[in-house]
Amino acid sequence: MDQSQLSSHIKSWGIELGFQQVGITTTALEEDEAYLLNWLKEGRHGEMSYMQRHGTKRSRPSDLVPGTISVISLRMDYLAPSSKHPAQVLNNKELAYVSRYAMGRDYHKLMRQRLQKLATKIETQYGQFGYRCFVDSAPILEKALARNAGLGWIGKHSNLINPKAGSWFFLGEIYTDLPLEIDKPFTEHHCGSCNACIDICPTQAIVGPMQVDARRCISYLTIELRSSIPEEFRKMIGNRVYGCDDCQLICPWNKFAKNTEEEDFRVRNGLDAPTLVELFAWTEAEFLKNTEGSAIRRIGYECWSRNIAVGLGNAPKTDETISALKARANDPSDMVREHVSWALAQHKCH
Image (tube, rainbow, N blue to C red; front, side, top):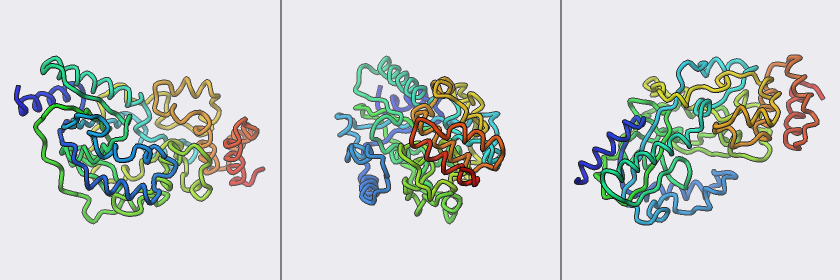
């Protein structure tokens, strides 16, 4: 089987396994490495020390996995059908907004299994080869690799945009030592003069085209940050308790986005439009039960409670809101108590 045939088969097998697009690229990321190092130098990674810890392994695939000469990049749609429209949730301040990618099963597990199936299929047809599968599980510049593999361009919000599918999709990679036929990179940039994502960002975290300061980003503040959320951002967070999709919701290219056919990505436990009060009433055991198999579980009960306390501080002042906050005014967690105190103060209650 020659390079062209094998590459063509890999793409067909990837589609059969539920991926919407498959591309192949080299390991060359010199320009992206310079961008990454400058971003780190400016401290825009916040407390995500792992971004710095791995050095240039993130931009040099063959340093991370010796022998790598080709990268298979794949994307999978995740927008769940029949879920409550995001705008309805964001506009109702008694509801809690969960980023649309996290409403179903944890994509890491599902995609990693599919990537492994693809690798096994290649091995069955081609013979043994060197490879490693990744889904947000190692220091990888996945969007740059996907762009180079022809899957789309990196938009001003720093997410990958596909002209026929928008940006509501996950990315995964297979690093391999196979000499595959390389796809043409996506060199065009179709954002034009549109700055909608920059303008809509609640915390103004997009400080320039393709320049995100994570320290201001709601996704970072509610998911990656493990300490107190800076007070300057709490009002801006609104009712977003896990992540933020505003830059994708406003993007005109997402009119081409398609709903997922993956059953595992469908909404679980009503997380498309839960109330803040009901989520805040969860015990830790209920949190663990209701987030089983979900990406949400990784932030832990304490940060989950911290985020919801902020949401309740921004919610309308009702008896239910105040009662919910007061019920946890003596929470065992110092951090949760501090955010509850802030929330009560927003309603002029102490």
